[in-house]
Image (cartoon, rainbow over all chains, first blue to last red; front, side, top):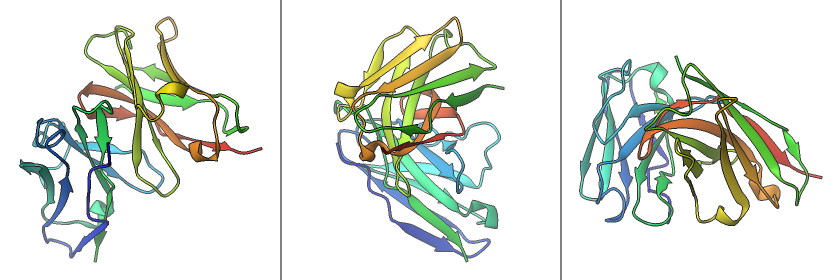
Length: 111
Length: 119
């Protein structure tokens, strides 16, 4: 099971919206609504920001939103802020014997 | 508030066994519905799922590591553990423990611990 594919980097200016894609297959993203997104600041543990494609855990800003179409999931950050500069990872359940697969990661830069 | 904390040696010799423990506070590892998980991150790289153990004691592992991994629960200490045998330099990574509440859904994480494999 290969990692889910994400763009290596995405950038935007403060206040703008950006979207990060996460492409998988019909065995993972395409088959299940078990897609999560994590934010990781340098030298910190990942933090869950989206679960089950669209759900925001308590305390997560509504500037973060998730969606899915076919084998691709997306994370949109609206009203980009300096504190959003971090690495972002998607993950999905998979019917392969790997069970869980993470994305390659995307570095978000706020210009 | 649930908290997780990894502990164990930061340096392991090649061919030896890496052993880490995750101590859970603010909640019981015996509570139903949770997956107690280990995830690692090679330096400067992405996340890799190692495996998890369900509250019932049933464990699931990444097939790429399955022959070398054991995850176990110690309910008396409210801890769960990772053992990875026959380590090589390729196992050098930051190891995180995390609580899963559903598939691919990890809501609480430990701070992570760097384990270096070197003689």
